[in-house]
Image 1 (cartoon, helix red, strand yellow):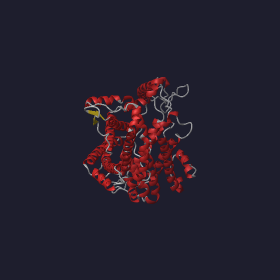
Image 2 (cartoon, one colour; image 1 turned 90 degrees about the horizontal axis):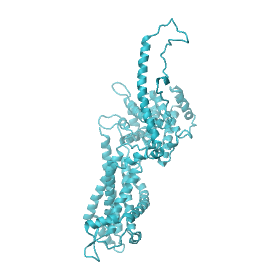
Image 3 (cartoon, one colour; image 1 turned 135 degrees about the vertical axis):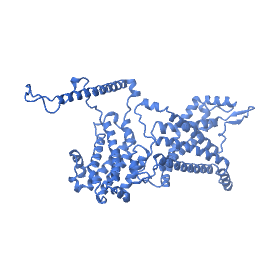
Image 4 (cartoon, one colour; image 1 turned 45 degrees about the horizontal axis):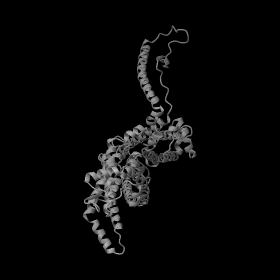
Length: 564
């Protein structure tokens, strides 16, 4: 069976090849426009042709390949693991200095340096070497513009790393309707170009300010190491920096770097989110229920996506779900898929319940006198008089004492644990400590909602399969589990409703993140669509479905089509 790492690795290599091809195309286009000569078109095309097939372009392609594989390694490490849980400022601060982030920051700095050197060399500028022959001295002088660009490239790599991986969480964005790769690239080109040129302004401003304050330190180090003189006006003076115009080149190369990384990220997202067709039952290939079992992993997203496709557009695989195993006559395929789907829905419901339940349950008292222990059945004494006709059962009294001792032991351990947690909470609520160790606003809810995409697909896929079973399920394997499916969906909706009702949401769970708000709205819409699909399909037979009274009450608005 193909493992989840093999599926991801194959797609990652495909994304790298796509990215490398597109980066080479952009480099060729850059060379073509840099050497533009309208008055001499033949020499223009000849010089462009020579540069494209020259050794310098080959070396740049090798550097581009290294950069692409570095970036693929970074994204692979981020997308293969579940989303990290950082609910306090202290945990976010510690995350900055993990070994993985230190390595990735170095890789991004090298990526920015190589990309800046690549584009400056393709432009045939004089700012891709650190040394030049002095005009007023006998020796070599420092080309500070080149130093400025090289340090600027590393700055841009670190700037992008902090914004894309530290201050935000990298996520794969699965489209609702998957389109052809070329069609998606065509639609994304305009957005990538505008974002590249627009988002490169502020990091250039920050770097110019940084170089104005501390630029003399790297300049002195490089000059001492290579024994270079400085005859040009120093760029750590803001007026000299503006007069030199090198900041314009830095902005242009930074825009190209951002366009490069945005293109890479778009290509990775397009290739990695391509739908995958899983088998319903197979001994060699990956199966649908096995993929669904990996909910928080990359394969779990593909499994939930494929479940929705099966439920709406693949009648052949739906018939496999409804078939009975031979020999035995058991609905194994349906049971496996139902179990995986209910695990996804119920675990997500449990996470929402934990967020909604801010009030702790009433704990048992510390001492024995505060405990309310129900006496055993069969009351020994009645009123104030002893019943002489009834003999006390000594065995029951012995078992009762044993159970009471066990309850005391369990209660004591639980009380110690709760007291310790309460002490930590009281310490964390102190003004200074609360800033670092206190729970951040809406982080838990945002963390849960960021994982809602496979839950939406699972709800819709399960609902559409159940609805299709009315006509396609010859053996009635789905109808037996219909109450379970409806109850799971209604329970999830009731917990999601608590997040939208005014006055029931704690202040720390009020959403301020635009993406999380959109995900909550999309999850509610998907959930209502799923319930409507089942209720309307089975509306004629709904009174025959055994359900709990609470579930029946919650379903009534859907039966009357009054649920907005």
